[in-house]
Amino acid sequence: MNKKKPSQKTDDIYASKDLATPLAKYQFPNHQHKAEIIFSAIKDELLLDGNSRQNLATFCQTWVDEESRELMNLSIDKNIIDKDEYPQTAEIETRCVHLLADLWHSPSPTETLGCSTIGSSEAAMLGGLALKWQWRKKREKLKKTTSKPNLICGPVQVCWHKFAKYFDVELREIPLEKNRLLMTPEEVCKRIDENTIGVVPTLGVTFTCQYEPVLEVHEALDTYEKKHGLNIPMHIDAASGGFLAPFCAPTLQWDFRLPRVKSINASGHKFGLAPLGVGWVVWREVKDLPPDLIFRVNYLGGDMPTFALNFSRPGGQVITQYYNFLHLGREGYREIHDRCYETASYLSKSIANMGPFKIIYGSDKEKGIPALTWTLKNEKSMSGYTLFDLADRLRNRGWQVPAYSMPAHREDLVVQRILVRHGVSRDLAELLILDISRTLKYFQEHSKPVAKPVHRTVAFNHS
Ligand SMILES: *Cc1c(COP(=O)(O)O)cnc(C)c1O
Image (cartoon, rainbow, N blue to C red):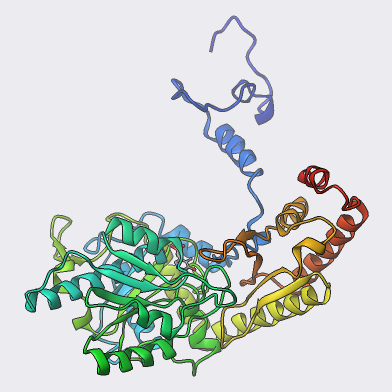
C-alpha cells in the first residue's frame, strides 16, 4: 500500500478497492487479493446460475443431505486412483460393485468385475469397448476381418455417438417412425450382421423417458441366433433405470437375469442419489471383461489393476454412494422413488387436464422413469404459442422445463419434459402446475388475431 494515500478504514468487503473493478476475465492477475473478498465476489457471480432444485430438465441429483456433505468434505483430498494410499476407499468402491452386481442379478456377484466412473458416459464407453474387444477376439479366431464393427441402438444419449466416433464403431441407430419412438425387436434384427458387436437398449430413453423393450429384444436375438448362427451380446444403458427398476419394478426382466446382457451402466448421480460425479459399469461375469483392457501400474506403490479412461479423480462420490446404499437399502430407494412416480403421475394428469397438451409418456413404473413428456395436441390451432414459448415463460419463475425436438426421423415432433427427482415434492409440483396455468392464461390474453401469421411470429418472439 502507498502510505501517502489514505488507506481504507472499514473492513467491509464491498467497500474494498478490490471490488471496485470487475473480476479478471482475460488477463491473468499479477497481484494477490484477499481470500474472503474474492470468495464473496465469486459467490455473488454464482447467484446468476439457475436454482438447481427448480431444474426439472436434469436427471441428476440436486438434493444433498447433511451426512453426504460431511462425507464429501472428509474425502476432498482422496484420489480414487491411489488405491495404495487410500485402500479403504478402494475397498468401498469394490463393495459398491458387488452390491450392484447383486442388485442387477449377476450369476456371480461376489467375483464379477466393474468399476466406478465419473458418470454413465464413461461407463457406457467402457461397456462398448469390452463389446468391441470381445467381437474382435471372436473374429480373429475365425480369421475374418475386424475393420468394420457396428453397434445397434434406439434413440440414444449423446455418449453413444461419442463412443462410436472416438472408438471407430459404426452406430446403427434405429430412426424413429411415426408413433414408434423406441427400438423394436424387428428393427434391431434388420440391422444385425457378422460385424455387430452388440445391441444397446436404453432403460430410460433421454427423449421420452421410456424403457426400451429389453426382454423382447433379447428373445428376438435368441430366435435370430437359431436361424443365422450369430450370437449377439447386449449392453444395457441403464443410466436412470438401473437405480429405479430394481426397486420399483422388481419383476421387470432387463438385467443379468437375461444371459445376453454382458454389461450394464448406470449413473450413481442420477437415481442412485449420490452427489454429482459418479457412474458405474458392471460386467455379468469376470469372463465378460477382456483382460487386455485392464492396465496394471505400480508407480503409486502396490499393484493396481485399472480399467478407466481417467486417472486421478475424486473419491468422495463413491464413498457417499456407499453411504446411500447402506443408509437407504432397497426399502429406502423404493419409498423415495415411489413418491417421485406418484408426483410425476399427478403432474401428468394435471397437464393432460389443461386441454392443449397430449401426454406421450406419463410416469409408469413398469415402462419408464418418474417423469412425463408431452406435446401440443394441435400446434396450428393454438393461440399462437409453441412449447418453446411455454418453456421460456416458465423460466421467469425459475422453472426449467425444457422443450426440444425429437431425433431422426421425427425432428418435426416437439416435446416438453419434466423429471421428478428426489426433492421434487408434491407441493412444488402443485406450484409448478399453477405457474403453467397462469402462463396459458397469459398466452390467451396476449394472443393476437391469427389473421397474419408473419406478425404473430414477431409478436410472440419476446413472450
Ligand atoms: C444421463 C445419461 C447418460 C450420460 O450419463 P452421465 O452420467 O451424465 O455421464 C447416458 N445415457 C443415458 C440414457 C442417460 O440418461
